[in-house]
Image (cartoon, rainbow, N blue to C red; front, side, top):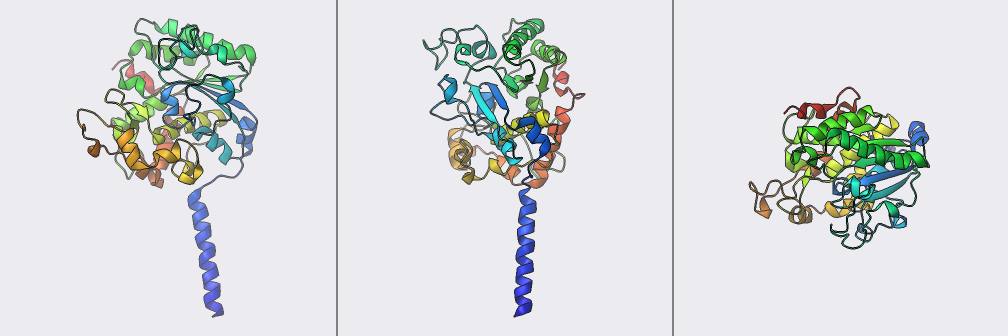
Length: 347
């Protein structure tokens, strides 16, 4: 009896240890604490940021430009910081269909839903606090008639808003997957190069996702197969290049690693698929049938029937090998000497 009891205790101890090892929740990291604890992080952008869950846009505040309703966000980026013991104030300054010229510039957006008649001078006036430690900028689109040099000057103007408030602010510029999906063109990509030379860090999650989705890059050690359905979400046939939760995690992870300098491999991701996390829209999107019916469309011409829409991002989240492979690609595409987007200039 005593031997059986000892054996049972040993088994339970091993099981608990094994579970803890699989969970891979990191201990409080002094490097993360130093970089992010007590800091203010601002995400400026549109649906290419909030669709994936980088920030946890809520139905109550997504159209409201009042800053007080957009602080203390708890999306994926916050969850990564929290897992390392860093408490950050993440501010969600994202609005669907908006570009930086409407969010931080002088371009009025009164004719764009949901802004008709409400914000005739853009959104900057509502951004009453402009003092941040980190600012992540994501452009919606690039005007066809805007040169690379003009784009750079606009971005420098946006950067000045935050540098004037805090000269030590660290700025990041996002290249999202829609850049390649809708063929922004070489002029805009040249602008990215100029922005990088200006000292603004480029976060190139878009190229990573697009390369894997289209087969240009293979995920190391992958057990799953990948195409656009692994990463992309759409409500309408013409709106097929927004990030799903897997893509949103890669965006959040790249931002986190760029700020902290930590290896992306081994970072936690259980908050992306555990419904008990309570983070909107994460738990909602994990109702997969609802997700497929309401949000997901791989390609309207190929899969017009809602019942044929398939996505395997849940399987990817549940594959340790695949997540390790994707995390390793985050390191690769984040490397200073990579500039993976440059190959698209000549294509």
